[in-house]
Image (cartoon, rainbow, N blue to C red; front, side):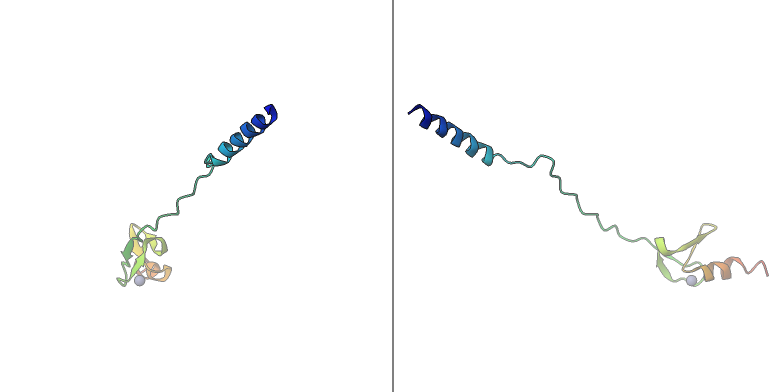
Length: 77
Ligand SMILES: [Zn+2]
């Protein structure tokens, strides 16, 4: 009968081990938040473009390199 109790204890131990939540080391990476895009207006034509896509020159934003050159390059003749 001693063996039966031993196996019963092993079974209980396994049962408890399986019941334990094993979530150690599992961290769901939080999805990147969609930051609202900052819009700037072109200093030359006034078109609104995302800040990342804008061309910055002399503290002014432009929608394209062309407009930056047109606005800033006029003085160069
Ligand atoms: Zn423009």
